[in-house]
Length: 145
Image 1: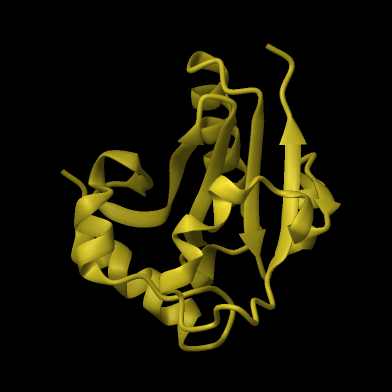
Image 2 (image 1 turned 180 degrees about the vertical axis):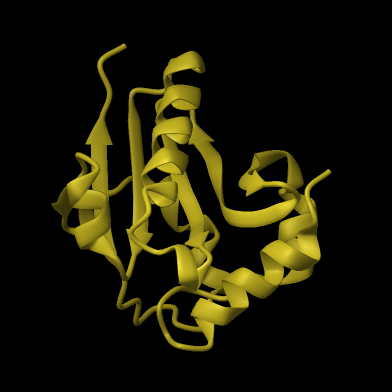
C-alpha cells in the first residue's frame, strides 16, 4: 500500500495554497486502490487517482507533484498512466475538475463547460465545501479505443 500520510501531506500542501481541493485521510484510504504514485528510491515524487464514474467515464483526481519537482514530467507521466489504465478498462472519456487546466490542455485535454459533464459527475460534489459555487475548470479527453 502507498503511504497515505505522504500523499495526504502532498495534497494538503497544494490545497492550503488554493491550488487543489483538500482530500481527507478517510477519502484517501477508501480510494487507496485508485491511487497511483511516482516514486524514486522510496521518495514520493507525485501521486494521483483514476476514479471510474461509469462504464464510459473516469476522472483524474488529486494529481500532485512535489513542489521541487514541478515541470519535470512527473505529472505528465502520471496522466499518461491514468489514460493507459482507462484504455485497458475500455473507458472512452476521462475528465478532471481542476485549477490547473493549462497543464491538462498540454496533455491533450480540452476545456469544456462543467455543465456539459454527466450528472453522474456531481454525486460527490454535494459533499464539497465549495458546492454549489465550484470554481474549478473542467477538462476532457476522448480516447481512441
